[in-house]
Length: 114
Image: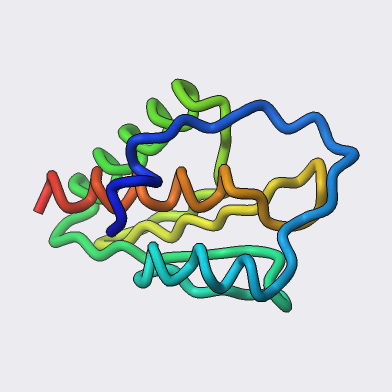
């Protein structure tokens, strides 16, 4: 994980800007290697693994708190032993640097709980 992304904060995206080009998205994805680039470079996703449902749920709560603090809200799906987080900036229907900032911060949250 690159500390540069973790140290940054998400900036409000009001739309009207183009999403990251696939090559730019791949460059940023290399800084968050656990994340998969999906939908022709328009979304990133990662599945986090946990030992119990309670651990997964606790992580979801941390994800929610971080999302509120950053003003950048991912799609989250969870169940027994897993949490899947999907990031995309919906206002631009693609990826923004904010998505990778959140990904790096979520990686840090997961590592802290390990």
